[in-house]
Length: 187
Image 1: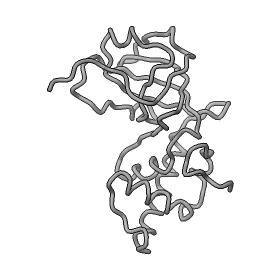
Image 2: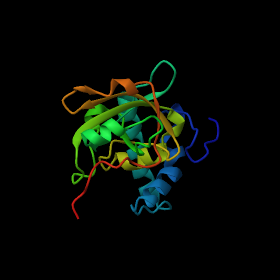
Image 3: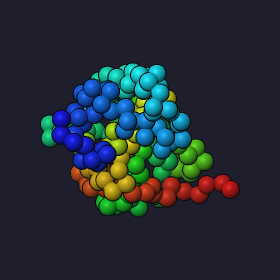
Image 4: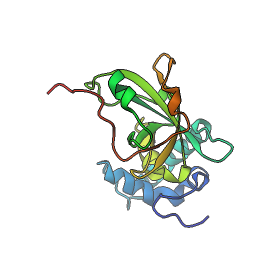
């Protein structure tokens, strides 16, 4: 297996088909970065993390949808007012927290104004923070965490019921650096 640069640029199969034991150090580091304390020197903890990685790999191999060009489909729910949706333009940043499955796309900020819309896009597998994905998977976070500087190609935007919106943006490139303003939040 080619050496990984932390995670950026790594091929998806390097993470989803690797021996879980070879990923333990990187996943333990990712767990620490999110506030989960794991003793990476404790053999029992290392075995437990390895088992979590193996379960996550199996789940992800069945959930990640790759296109013929190797890119993967990702989904993100956002609370976008009609005004914010109308103002959306290629190059805007859509955020880093996505899901591999449309059903798993849930917005985090319930206070944000606007209708719930699901954004679907193609992303490069090398732009997924695989160590973070594997680290959070066992806690129930089925998240496709993307790099802050990554780009995605929009497939479509739909209301939660599937009604398509802004078909004119399909095929456009968007960023992930930050999220769009979605409307006023109560203070």
